[in-house]
Amino acid sequence: MTPEDRRRTLTDILLAEDPTDGLWKICDSGVAEELVPELPALRLEQDPIHRHKDVLAHTIAVTAKTRPDLVLRLAALFHDIGKPRTRSFEHGGVSFRHHEAVGAKMTRKRLRALAFDESIVLDVTELVRLSGRFKGYGDGWSDSAVRRYARDAGHLLGLLNELIRSDCTTRNQAKEARLQEQIDELEVRILDLVKADREAAERPQMDGKAVMERFGVSGGPLIGQALAYLLDVKRAEGELPNEELEARLDAWWTEHAGPAA
Image (cartoon, rainbow, N blue to C red):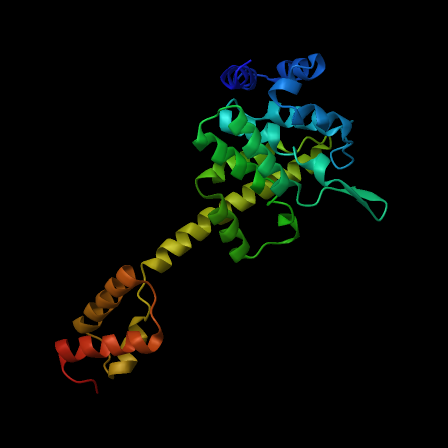
């Protein structure tokens, strides 16, 4: 088959309402060796974390849980592809450190070999790279960590959260519910922080009290005009060092109200 034929075959399987049978069929028949040779290798990798008989079973389960969106389904199919290359045994257990980063490189190479559009290659690769980022959220994330998560995900934030939701294939209903609640909470926090940041961006760097104290006045229309000026500066140039901002405000005040008190 040509790369385009292989891409179409894989795409048809992934976009089925339930891709489970199609994925098992290509793995059991050996066709996957030609389409995605990294996929059958997952069958040999035991997965004590998700308690499936192997990583392949978990991967197909995750893929089947996602909605039939090509980028999302590809990300689900490849999200653990780096595990065989990163497996190590420490303290009597097994770990797959940095398998997301390794898997992202493998994903990029395979999708390009399958002649997928570069935009799809980049999006799927990034989702694989970020697929483990949610780990540790339950231990407590600061607002900065939440902002960083959302910023790094960018336009893929919604798909990334969908992938994380689907990545939980445990039969423990309580554990599943806790994960979904944590993602719900994270999404609410992201929205709240976006709103707060937007509001903060619409406030001048100095407030009215600071302006009044600086010029020894108790209020009046000029304070409102000064705050509008400061907001214009912030919108145009972002936050400035305090000394520079004060110097500009002094110049503005001298021009509009005379020398400062």
